[in-house]
Image (cartoon, rainbow, N blue to C red; front, side, top):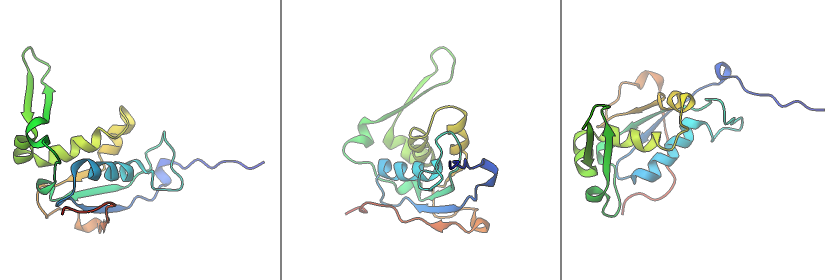
Length: 149
């Protein structure tokens, strides 16, 4: 009888990946980043463990939204106080906080709860091309799919 080896979270070798979001479609970018954060690209993937790698996303302000999403898509959040509902269009959110647009798109594709929050902490998003993670030597990640035409 063979036994299945379950990987331990502290024994996992985590890598760092660099993703350039320039001219990438937001949803397609987010699915591939969420796959890396979750660890589904690894042979030893286990759904209940955080085995994923770190991802650094640069040029978040140059991400693309298809169709009429710039005007029709709205981001909503609530402060918790009476009348504290806030609504912002995707165009305004992309202009003011492009990092948040990418973060929220990826977080929506991760598990909910403690495990998903742990995975989301390994995501670093930056507006421009500069990032402070050069010491980790992130490998450039080639995204699947086609770039902007």
